[in-house]
Length: 397
Image 1 (tube, rainbow, N blue to C red):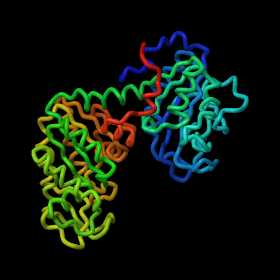
Image 2: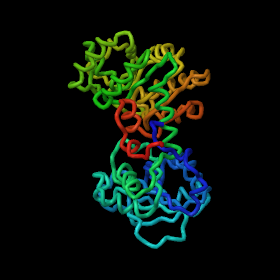
Image 3: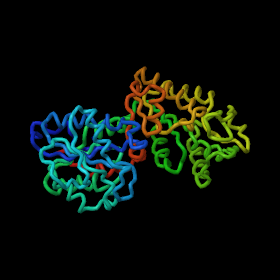
Image 4: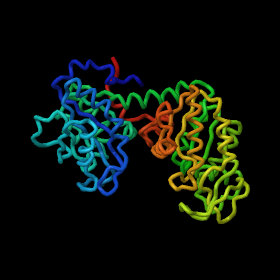
């Protein structure tokens, strides 16, 4: 795993009685003070359980939302600690101070308040990192979803612990993420098919360029396909289009004609509503007052056929506005097709929160090789960027 130490490589016998700082990604969606989806809590359980079984005292750090460096009850991790306690069938002591100041020596599982309540967390303030580092002598980073950011509780804390003579290692989830994403990108079994969706090209230019050097075919859907349509001289009506990226799309089309596959037909409507009147049209037939909101049935078939023989599939981003009923069929149908390909032995990795949600809605998550928990981090990895949360860990000897 990129030459970094992992929890699997660590002598767990030596953990008994030690205090371990665990950076987890417990940034769960909240609705009216309640957890709407506890998937990220569930994925954190293997590392937590392993540390506790080894006899370690664990102090958990995480962020939640964007409280803008001030305490805000709406972004408190207290309900997260309560739910984690239910999942573990164990007490989790919640400490309302993000820096962990207070008396809690008797507890063996502790969660500190939201790291982003602190001014300096996002800025990777060294003093904050050093303050946390005094709480333990081993740092386990399991927060892949935050690995692309150099924050005080991720990269900063890793360096602070190492500066004190301790070690910073990857947790089980972090290792798993890097293994499967690395396998798909750096050592894919051909044919290798990439699928990209979502709203914008601008946030994925590096990803597109990186994948085009590796894949046999790249299928593009979602609103980003509209910019390619405009690059082809087609009408996109009132659809989302990045005008400043049209020339980039033109270059990509010209340089990769044999690899890029765009939608043949699409689902259009006048507005994004559950009961909106909608119709299927070919991409050349989009009218001036239409919005392109999903790929059409012919495209689903074409994408399925293009991916059918793949041995490696990497998918990031939905094919349409899948959260709104009439415009989710393309994404859901494609997710089921990809699951069938995975059933036949292909390596299938899905990255990004929306893609993961779509796989869940389609009921195929358990049939896929790996569903990444980190949207921005997985994109950064796919683009070939250095992930500070990984780079800062201890090197293997």
